[in-house]
Image 1 (tube, one colour):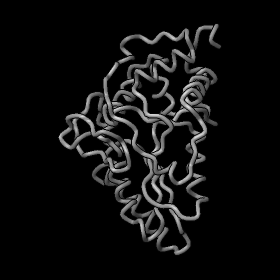
Image 2: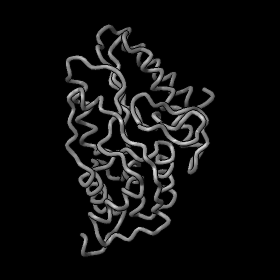
Image 3: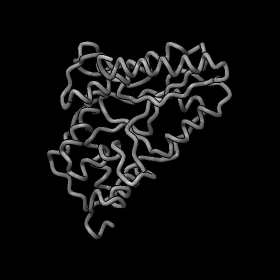
Image 4: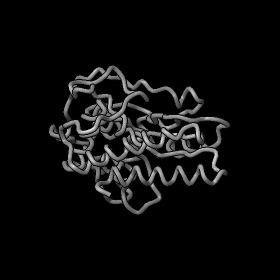
Length: 245
């Protein structure tokens, strides 16, 4: 394969075709990513009014905070999801495009997504740049709890009939709003100015498809962020003033 995008698309094709050939698979549920759902206008100048299932990330858009790795990831997730949905009809295809996932883990190390979500608290500039990349790509940052991720997959598995693309996030926040929530939950947190960039963007979250299908998110913003911080404390990835522990 010439790149990760070509390899990812080939992998998706192989899996779907095996499902169809088997004759026993009714529905394929795919864990996608909102990095494939950029609401940037085609010329790259500004954002659409809302982020919803009609949004797709354009190939080769130049973005602040991007790296070759991040752009390759966005490209492969976009191309593979489009290829997957092309098979919808042959079998039921459900694509759950997840926002940035926070919360706990059974692992002994911090998941990468949680590292990104708490980067303003850990003052990790390199990881914070990924948070800002998501904000530049998506307008704001969609977030959700890992428990809701699991529940959404189970919901799509158990529903008698469901297919198509579904964006999956509890909240749609700017990075400055995320920092503000952290300060409200843990008042002694000191976030340096370089980790808080206030942007005046009017774009809103426009996706209601998953809720319209009957799914209910159970974890609010406070729970997502608090559980993410507590995971970092548990695993020794960050420290807070003693009054906050």
